[in-house]
Image 1: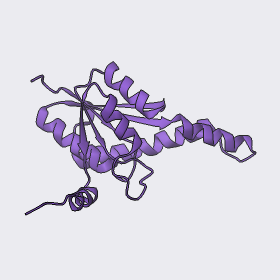
Image 2: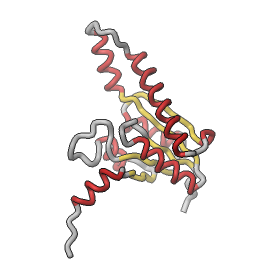
Image 3: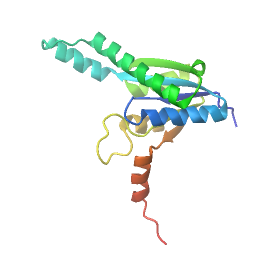
Image 4: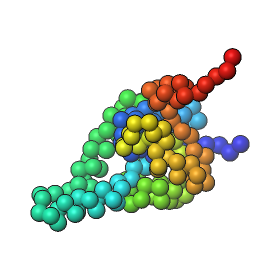
Length: 165
């Protein structure tokens, strides 16, 4: 089996991101691997902000992007400190575009050995257990992908399994 030396953790900075990062950091510690944090700002969100700006509202795409990056950097620093994972072993990549395409490009360009991501994104629609980004990544990723389950969703999934005695 090939040594796992680079783990990419895909974060959308939903309520599950702290757990996803902690899981990836624990895995990286055990495997003595580096972490690449990949966070993609969806280009659809930027276009929506630009549309609102064109309607005369006081917002613009560049300030939106900078605000999102700063917010995510702050949260990521908190995640890193809580995990105790060495900051010098973490590379952060912020991208803009289609999350699936950008995550796959990063995985290939960075030659990662494994991807860790959650199964739910920011939309968190009730009853949806696998988000569209996660679902498409599982189908398209040429790299081993590990699916993190937060405790709440893990319990919901367990209840859906009907065991026969």
